[in-house]
Amino acid sequence: MVDRSGAGPDRIDPSALRWLIGHELRAAREQAGHTQSAAARVLGCTHAKINYLEQGKNQQRPDEVGMLLRSYGAEAGDVERLASLAAAADRGTWWAPFADVVPDWLRTFVGLEGLASTSFAYEPLLLHGLLQTRAYATAVESVEYLPVTREEIGRRVDNRIARQEVLRRAAEPLVLHAVVDESVLRRCTGDREVMTRQLDHLVDMADRPNIDLRIMTLDARVYPAAFGAFQLLTSPCASAPYVACAADVTGFRYHENRAAIDAHATLFEYLSRVSLAPDDSVERIQDIAKELSRD
Image (tube, rainbow, N blue to C red):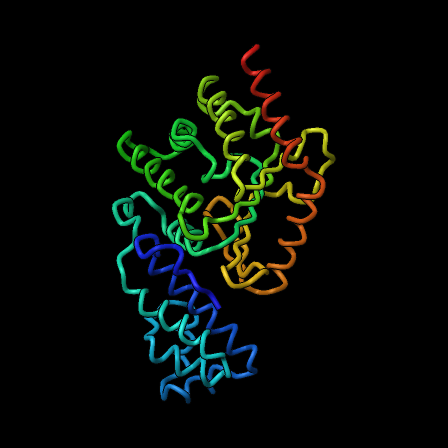
């Protein structure tokens, strides 16, 4: 079960929280070997309501969450934790000021990111949003194939910088394991000054105890993640990831089934193994920064 009390009430996103509660309800039901029809009989409701509760589409009442979990044989502590999270899911969201510039797919991800304890991310094209400087993020948001105003760009960047708080929160900061393709470091996003400061920032970030940064070098052979970026998120009370988020042109696709999650986890382990170790990665970043300053 998930205990996200360390995130702080102002950092909890209700929609993501409902999604996560639904995930935990479904996992507990399946582990107990119960059907949705059996769960519906516990609450005296329809099969459709259970389906909506497990998808996070309906508000999960704390008493109903408790009834379901107890019928599944869950431990008292897990019942209490998930019921308390259900009670917190009616709060406002911290990113409400940016709601009109944050697409739906990103709202879900930002919320899940704030609830996670660990993130495993592979980035082949851009630096991870949690590692970007404001100038780099502005350059990224400015490369837009659809019309966008300067004000909108600024608010998107503000939202991106606000997300980075998860790395600095006092209670249980997010642990980030990131594999970045070397081409990302060599691609001039913005101008030379932007990239120089971004590389220096990466070195500083890599020195944090909750960040493991590895560089996939250009001389690495073609590898099986060449298709695009993905992330895995792990809950505070579980060692295994509970969702895989794969990026495409429409945003993230969310994989909850165990086979898809395990496939992405195995792939990330491989990418980490064939990338440079953290200390060597920092040296590579510093070397690229020196090359950039000489050009």
